Image (cartoon, rainbow, N blue to C red):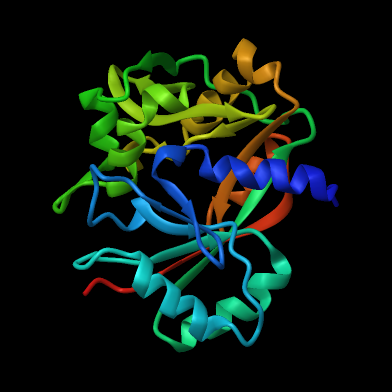
Length: 248
């Protein structure tokens, strides 16, 4: 268990990319719309949601008024257990996709050593090798695009690990209010099982800014490699939810 103060501090790292210039309050949470991404689901959202069991209809009506016409997705995210206990089933009944993830904090020493053959380099946010991990037939991942756009303001680093001279994995970090937070940890399929993620995580942990923070947090999907992070000394402390409508 963690204190409510720490729960709020850790949960708020999810919103570090939200520029206060583009954020305004609503009845149910903070609405954010970045003008450079007018149709982006991850740039148009309600955060820190408060919603009673009988207020879901009012919440969705508020979304319709807040979001601009033509938006592909709507998104709600947050970490308040008492809110999401009733909000999750209510949104699913209305056709939303709801994803519950786990937020872990570093609490113990690692029992899995890094691979010394992994060469790690800090790269710029717009690195072509970094972008290769976020590219598909549909183009660049939208979340990465926005993060890249906000990289200077968010601070921290992006890093790529290389094996056999090839980019094998990537991650990064940023910090807010004494909490350092990992960016998405990804290992290319051809290099999995060779200690790439372990080496990337170890590298981030050793960064002076990260090691000087009060906490180091990582967000893991329900079906993510939780066992690996446990071996690296991370422990689950709280859930986190995201809900999105299907594309129109």
